[in-house]
Image 1 (cartoon, rainbow, N blue to C red):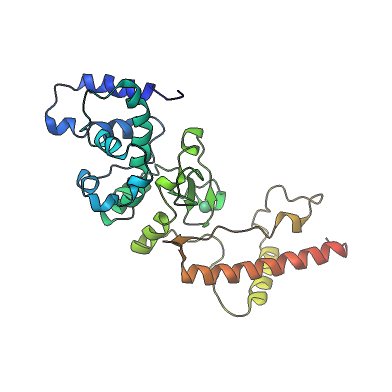
Image 2 (image 1 turned 90 degrees about the vertical axis):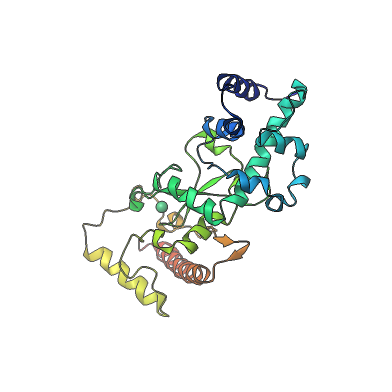
Length: 287
Ligand SMILES: [Zn+2]
């Protein structure tokens, strides 16, 4: 059977090290071990009383095999006489269960507060986009269903998604963070929304999108200190750089955020108009 046994052995070794601890120490073992394992740095600690309240776990028994025993393992109530072979597969199920509980926990008030601590420490890394000036990122799932998509990182400044740098983090299931988390965090704590980079009138939703675009273009021409985008030389088509790509759409419990959706529609219409104009100019050989 293809079961990773090593984490269980590591866990057991650690258990033996701290076997002198009291019952209350003992009860925190599995989660403490899981959080301290390499590659699990994105996870925060789920309060034990949240896990022990069965209401919070509604429906998870259908998602996780050996649910009851996996739950016992997480809460350190697993019988010692469980066979070693079962322990190996239980560890996999316990990770899945903890991940799914974690996704529910981080959208609660206490869970958000814990994740904010990690966000402030930039535990999830920083935006690679130069203009975002080292903006800290937040983890997000592209779906709430496990085993479908790995975790991505959301930048509140450029509102774009990035893949984690490390392959260890890149293989974490996105469902352990969910599609709602970063957007709910900014909704509940608007003071944490990072300031936008770029010109001061960026994002103003007036009706004259074309005028704004023209003004921005003139400004770039008038202010030569704005560095040209790297890689945009005369051999590369300008229009092909500004692709009409599908953008990431933030959602809270499956619903698009109204203001963001309006702004995105306007931004995309402006972008598409610009791309069309560039294509037209390139066809005429003007650039
Ligand atoms: Zn960014």
